[in-house]
Length: 347
Ligand code: SAM
Ligand code: SF4
Image 1 (cartoon, rainbow, N blue to C red):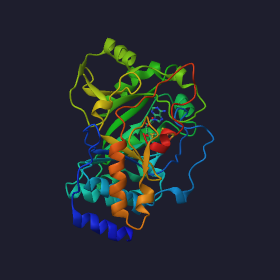
Image 2 (cartoon, rainbow, N blue to C red):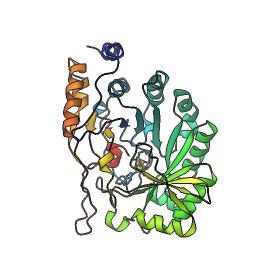
Image 3 (spheres, rainbow, N blue to C red):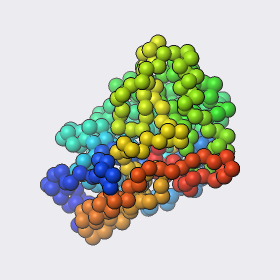
Image 4 (cartoon, rainbow, N blue to C red):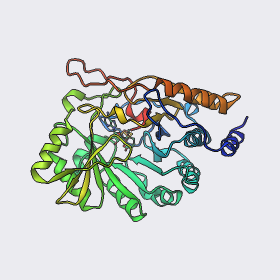
């Protein structure tokens, strides 16, 4: 069966059974990594010398669309495209355009992406036209020298120009900042003020031990509990009950009139309400960011009976989704908890 025939079958079959794991959690959110490559080399994410996957290992854009459409037919309501840097994948705008049809039909609530912002001046308008309404842009510092140090290959004007282009195109922006002791810990207030002055929300992320990098992660680790304490000395922060279906917990900042999110996988476990799975650019479906168990959807897509094989693989995935992650940053044991980089599984 060809990919086109399989797509037609998904369309004519309509919605299939919902994805529910062994703990009764409904899987409604997928992060889809479309490339492991990137035009930056952030020190906490990648080693300076990275070897990337050969292109033939990657799912083609057609295959990515097929897998995403299958997941949407099985109840996924929110799709976040990520990477690596998703906007450096050739033809990726065509993929957004195709996936946008699920927004039009009402099968998908949200199509979104996480990006370093470097390619947004080129692509923001096309993304909006494809149905994207929100983007997450990574920004760990407002200091140009520090930005160059953290990203190795990037310059501060890239995310800033990207943010402007996104907002000009009508996209709502949320900034993501990885909080790092001794790197940007003195800038937490400045980042919040900058985000809120510019009409963006901001989420802080604790550094996670994923993949070997050239830094000491235990030394970098900064608990977001202390960041929150620091921020609340200056501003009034009120807990918000809403979630976006992700792991962030939000507070409202009274004086600046904006939201601050905290993603705390290390100091506070959010697994009980986990509704997500992650697909790598090679079609490996990881049920948890903190575990190595996965099912191979590429083999399913490339088999003689893709639909049956995909359904079988998804059933297996639901049985295998673990109750919770178990990574920790141990100063006595500096090796990463998992060997794969965040750029492989997607942030
Ligand atoms: N290139 C895009 C970007 O930087 O936004 C998308 C991919 S990136 C892997 C997604 C997010 O993961 C970014 O916000 C990045 O800061 C974060 N990230 C990468 N490695 C991380 C790590 N080891 N711990 C915590 N966050 C990490
Ligand atoms: Fe690239 Fe994003 Fe990783 Fe930075 S965090 S190296 S921008 S994939």
